[in-house]
Image 1 (spheres, helix red, strand yellow):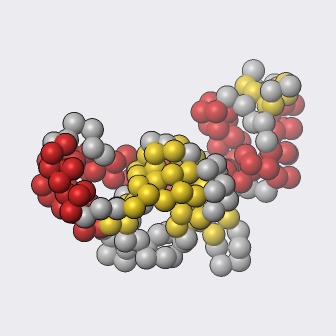
Image 2 (spheres, rainbow, N blue to C red):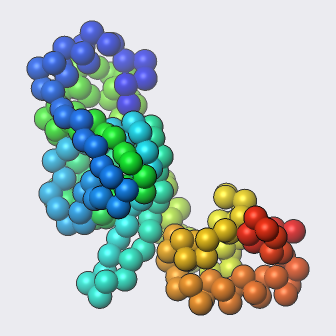
Length: 194
């Protein structure tokens, strides 16, 4: 977010409106779904996962993010300003947390920060659109093959099922079918494409 910015302007603003450093243990929530979104998280160490939970308790993993990354950018200035997902630490994490007013001042006073922030918002919007398309329009088999293309292998069935938003038995059936079709094979490293 600060790549190429005027360090003097940003430094002065952060001195006037300081944020705080947050440390989160594995499994700890950085933000909860439907809570008010008043701050931006600048993740500088660790990994997090964005999860959406239904009223019945069904969870859907939207994304796994690793430092450095910006969290909550699409929601900070929304009309409702609520987190539509929960953000949970998947490893020990550290994040610089800055309030909405500070972010607004930063983007008003430094055009580079504004440009970077808009790029981050656009990239997150494209990602969310792609993710929605995957869940709404693609079959489990095509999502699974896309996962293999992106990550190389399926090693942990429970974790992969969670990421793909399916049950473990459904994933196991899809993997078995792809093995029978000769599209993937099982190795010591997990399931991989042939």
